[in-house]
Image (cartoon, rainbow, N blue to C red):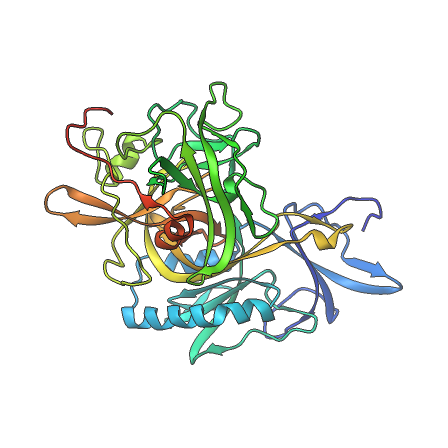
Length: 438
């Protein structure tokens, strides 16, 4: 390993090989490096004080083959609601202690199949899945993952969670009035995200919500009341324009019925909306979702669904309107996924720079037709279920907000009710009578 070469890594730890799984290497002690460039490490061994340690490298944000194989079979698989509820309850009760005991744990979720031989052989049995940074390596002074949780079988795979801020993607149009799904950012920062949904603030003003990490490079749990300007479209576009001021943004875990909240509230100062319309859709996306240019989707009624209290309509189609990928469709596949976000980059010269955030009690959405439900730039987008309505055809009911995704191509969504409670706001209800503005 070059003495002077600067190496950027996402994860770094010493571990012992668990021979239950196949890993490359001859030594019992290994160094795990999760990197974003396959050409960063060229040497097979790291030498320190006369000792050699085998290096195992993993690529971040590259979907592992095992997860891709299993996902293809999992799409369209419907589990019994009682089984799902039991698994979700178990994850909710055990996730905090599991993350505390296993530093390499990235995601706790469920799957309809147990995987063997790297996804080549599947066992048709619902299980709890532990996604870790390197399968087959146990961090020093830690134990292997449990084979069962509350009599529910478990499975171990490789994978990661990452947030969905974007950089200069989306429509350049200045929207007046504002629309949900528009690309937004801080006036003074390059990262961008999605204008999620309009809310009524305690003062009576109209605001909108988005993900807090859209506005701030996250370095841990935080709360900010700084009154910085928010622009739409995002910084970097020629016609970028201030549309609001940050009222509150924070990332906090466990304070709101055990949920992690990653949310920001913006008070709108210009281009106030008069109806719940969306931006960034194309004709093909509308057609695939049952809409058209003559019948656009709208969210005027402020309807929300609290999956903490009810399990009805679980299999209704979900849709989201994001600044990056527009209108996409999916299905709620888990209520209660838990993930760990770790700061994108640490350096070997400052190992203490690593920062973790645990996202508890989140929703997990699987995109339809093996397509992504959300991508970078969609953070903050609201997620809706489509209910059949005898009067209006399709009724949008908000269930949450996009905060990130996993390396097996699923989307992580924070439930909407804890967000609203945390920000002390309500979804804004528009008066649909005599609306002529488009």
